Picture 1 (spheres, rainbow, N blue to C red):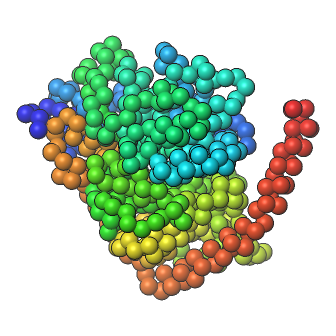
Picture 2: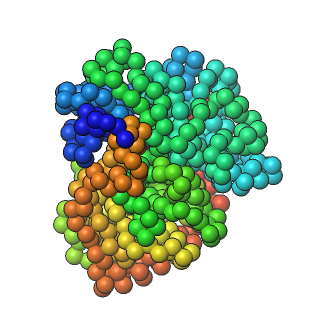
Picture 3: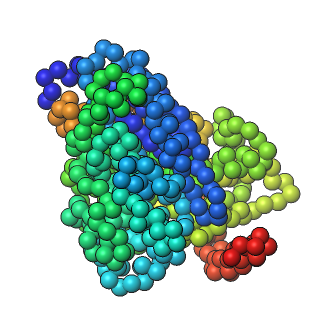
Length: 512
C-alpha cells in the first residue's frame, strides 16, 4: 500500500466511440473533477466507420486541461485508460498515425476474415486461442490493410488500440492489457500472449503488436515536457487499463455472476464476470476473455445498434435533440422493430443482416416508431440474456451504466422487457471509475480490486419489472425472434441486390 494515499489523485480516462471523458478521484472515493467532450465517427464509404486519430488526441488534451485546475492539492497523479474495443491506429516509427482508426462496426475486412476462416489451420488456431474470426475484430481490419495496394502495413511500426495510441502520444512505450488484447482477435486467451499460430496464418508479424501485461501494470511516467503540454504540473504515472466494458464492470461493483452489467451507450452490451466457464457457449458466439480483474473472465454479448440508432431515427423523422421520451409510455408498441442497422448482435451472429419493421399501418405515428425502436434495441439484448441464462447462469439482476441509463422511462421499459430488476447508478460512466481503480491498484492505493470495486459509485434507484407488462413483452420477444428468422432467409437475395447496386453506382460514377 502507498504510504500517503491521500496525496495521490486517481484519473480514469475513458476513450469511447463518440466521446472522451475523464473523472478524477481521491483515494477515499471523493470525486474531484470531471470533463468530457465528443467527436464524430466518419463513414466515408459503405461499410466503413472510422475515427480521426487527431480528433481523439484533441479530445484527450481538452479533458485533461479541463480537470487540471482541481488537482493542485496532490503530489502524484495515477492514470489508467478504459478504451473502446477493436478500434486501432497504425503508427509509424515516430508514433504518427498513418490512417484513420477503423472502429468495431467497420466492415471493410469482412471478405478477408471470411477467407481466413476458410483456411483449416487458421480456424483451428482461432479455436485453440479462444477466438472467433469475425468482421468485428481488429484482425479483420488488419487483413484489409495487409491487402491494400498502398502497402500501409509496410510503413507501420505498431498497430495500437486507442488507449495504447494515447500512451504512445504521451511519450511512453505502449503496453496493452489482456482484456484489450483479446478484443483484437489475436490474443491466445489461455496463454495470455499473442497467438503465434494466428499471426502466421494471417501473415502478420509479431512485432506489429505491443507487449501485453495484466491490467494495473506500470507503463511509465509521462515526460515532464508532455505533461506541461497537457496543462498539468504533476507527474502522471500511467498504468494499463482495459476494455471499456470490463472497466465499467469493475467500476460498477459487478463482481460475481449473479449480476450482469448492462452498458447502454452508442452500442449496447451485457457482461457477466465469472471465475470459470464449464459449459460450451460457442453456439451463442460468446467467447470468455480476460477481465481487468486477475483470475476472472468476462462473458460479453452486445450489438452495434444502441444509442447509435437514435440520432439516425431522429434525423429521419426531422426531430432534433433527444428522442427518448421523458415520460413512460402508456402501453407497449404494437410494432416490432428488429434494428439490425449494422448486422445482428453477438448471439445471432449475422453481420450483413438488415433491419426490419413489422406491423406498419396508416395509423403508425412517429412516436410509435420511436417507441418500437427503443423496445427493439432492448429485445436484442433480452434475447441474448435469455439464452445465456438457459445455459445455467443464475443471473438475478443487472446494473445499468452508460448515457442511456440516465433515462428512467427507458430503464423501466428495459426491466419490463428483460424481466429482471435493473439498478441504476448515480454515476453511469463507470468505465472511468473502473480505470481509476486500476490506476489505484497499480499505484498501491488499493490492496485488491475486490476491495475497491464499487467504492466510487452508488445506486440511485431500482427499476423492477411489472408483471403484466413483462407478459406482453415476452410475447413480443417471441415475435421479434420470429421476424428475424423469417427475414433471414431473404438475406442472400438482399446481399445480391446490395452488391448489384454498389457495382452500378461505381459504373455511374466512373469508378473501377
